[in-house]
Image (cartoon, rainbow, N blue to C red; front, top):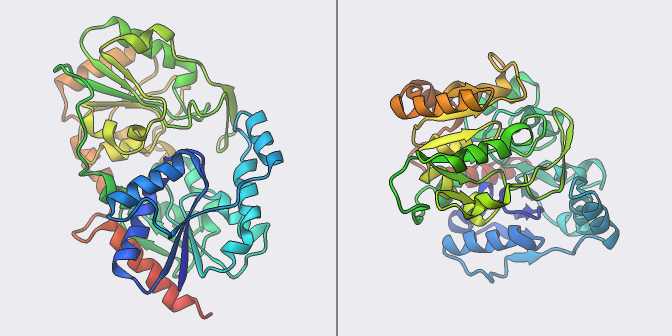
Length: 390
């Protein structure tokens, strides 16, 4: 049984959603011939870091560097400000023959479905771990139904995929959230050396959904001028990965506003545009209040119920909209004045939304005594055992 795990992205935010599953296969299913496919950059660094945390060598021979993208694809990606995934698609094309040798390829993203639809690998089983457990519509689009096996964090995800007709008979398993296995209990150093409440501002990159494009710099300016809160500004790592952001579902395109330069020097503001701490739950664990919009990291923050505030400068009609289910877990503010009030109320009534937070967290993550990564590994091996010979 040959199983590969593909990490085909320049940044590291997807790694922890599937790497712990590979570690569980290595530990509990040694009969599986396992390969971790990496493509360089921050993603490869994170693969090697988490693999070592799992007890293996960073130079393990099971970690295989893939043939790189063509120069033309690299040029197109850079020329578009990383808006076009030409480099990732080229890597799939350059390595399709290697993937064809496998029984299954495990991926946390959806570009890899091109291996079936464009590159002819019909017999390769594609297994989707997903990355994050958020509510955005793109997580439940048609591409989400192109996998042979989908690993789900909880009933909320299963129900939405099922309602959309995207689950194949016998082609899914609820396994919990493997990222928690790798990172939830890892030690981290304090971000600040004072006792002020810590707010995490975590805007999403999508111009249609993010608060950053319409009011983000003003949010930072307000925090710079006040003396009540510390601020951790750690947006989704893709926000500043591109000069121009193109997003789907809904389609939107915009130039990314820069961070006001003087703010980075203030002692009560910590800015992280994309280090490993932006993806290893350091900040969602450290903060007292979550300030955001569309990022699924809010659900990771709610592993410990705490106040949330959501910014809505785009005037979304969010009530009863499943794409904004997470906004039920806190106060929603359309502008800076409403944000100030919401933050103050978060301090005076920190448990106002605890009941709904706990309910939605339980629906989002099916967590049991057995580790999620082990459940996922068992599901993969069991499914392959039943389906590989068909």
